[in-house]
Length: 293
Image 1 (cartoon, rainbow, N blue to C red):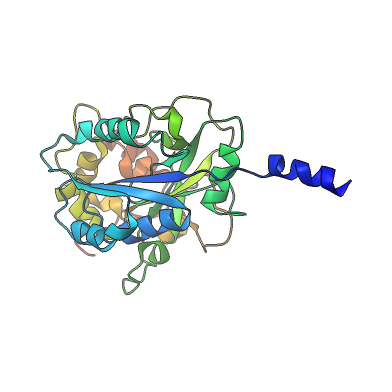
Image 2 (tube, rainbow, N blue to C red):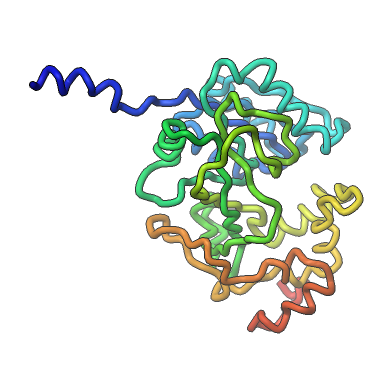
């Protein structure tokens, strides 16, 4: 009887997918080591392209070179709007036949499953062993606040306040390798069938006031094309909206389940002037002067 049961065990065991993490990097050297380490800890091999960074990104990638499958420098002159397509074509030509699963967060994003009961790789394994092909993620936007201790070098340890941003562009960040298609900022659906539950994505886009001002005034200046990626220019016209009070956001203690309930309306920060005025009534704190900070 035991032998019969044992003969079925291999069929019941979950297959462990060989997973590839993809990073497109630009001037986020302060958080890049943690992004790489997170993917490595979740059993992903990693490739990283540096799109003309002027900070220490190149040095970080040199430090991790022995642990990365591939690194490549792409001149800043290469059109940003073509970058995701170029990486997609590269994956299709060289990697999709070598891996089972691809996770492609932005360099300031950390992917999790729907709950914290297991690791991100545990979640990937569950999806891979299901009949579904790709995962969409809640965009949990983490933001610097007056609570942050600047002496803490780690962004993910320093910045604990967040709220879900539900009406942003959808976050499609993980899929079976064979379902890879040409990506448009990872907002379009991959091939195949969507997993019914959404994962959770910790997004550390603005990590201090100084970082936010540099990002909107320099690193992302002029990136808008038509209506695409207009929010950086909008932020630059009303910098006071960058300051968010900690009490208006959730707190992440690193253990408790993350909430996808949007308790803060990010259109107050990211929206047009009309949207900012509309939602200002929902924000219980007075607008503060950036110059005073």
